[in-house]
Image (cartoon, rainbow, N blue to C red; front, side, top):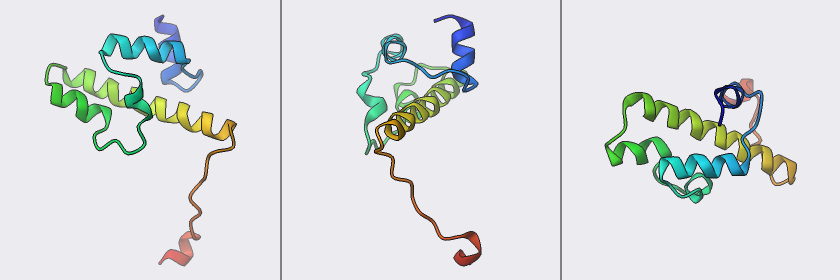
Length: 95
């Protein structure tokens, strides 16, 4: 993946493709299913902290990657009309 492509993904100017996600998972030595677990007790940053051999910068980048993938998943759910937003009361009614 080029720096330009990565920069576009990081700045929300481009979405990540399934192929690119697979390549990133291969590089990080994790299964792609980790990104799609709904009831995952540990987020990816916690998972990589537990492995213990990554720098603070790498952990932060993994957190950013995780957030990008959540956006990707939500976009897919919106596209398939599966996204169910949480309906909240107006702020003035909550207090």
